[in-house]
Image (cartoon, rainbow, N blue to C red; front, side, top):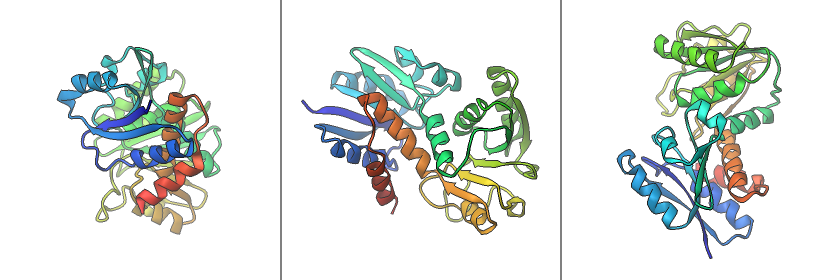
Length: 274
């Protein structure tokens, strides 16, 4: 019997998950399909019910459904509950369990660039859902100092207050994008949408980028102006395709309980982007 998996979101045509997961399922020689389902938020509940009735075993969840799906699940992993967002649903029998694999994907993507978890200063640009997952992951590093920089200061402050409540002892400050300073930062993460369009300017002054700074841009559809500028100034830099790869691989591991074919998934993503 063919096993069924998929991704839900709205809109969903931009998603690279089908290419990545279809390649993985073929490599594992499974009789399985992975499909994309466009699900407007108002139809989330009936669509989920229909997908479970059709035999779907697992789903990825993307915007704008990551938060809305939580009350519709039987159980939510503590990490996903704390972040307030689910990007992976596993079905075990009749029970549905929500996870968030973004943090694992982010950490493994940084490890590919030579980053190691140690005390230091990290600057996160943005204060939305992606920034929240990144901040949660970095706050688990003992001695890590975080700066949240956002166009709207109050939103950055809200994220900083949330993180301080969730992770006692972590040092978090908030500032605006214009006021951000990178002098002693070891890591810069762009979790804004600035860079998705070719016409976008840099989210910060490129003169602050310096050799030795690690720069990671969560945007994965294209190599961004921030990554280009960072490379020109001697930084180690990459865009978010590797995070997409590793969070997807962790989803597959949760669904199948077996090791995902990382190399096959990476090649499928690179081909899809090209």
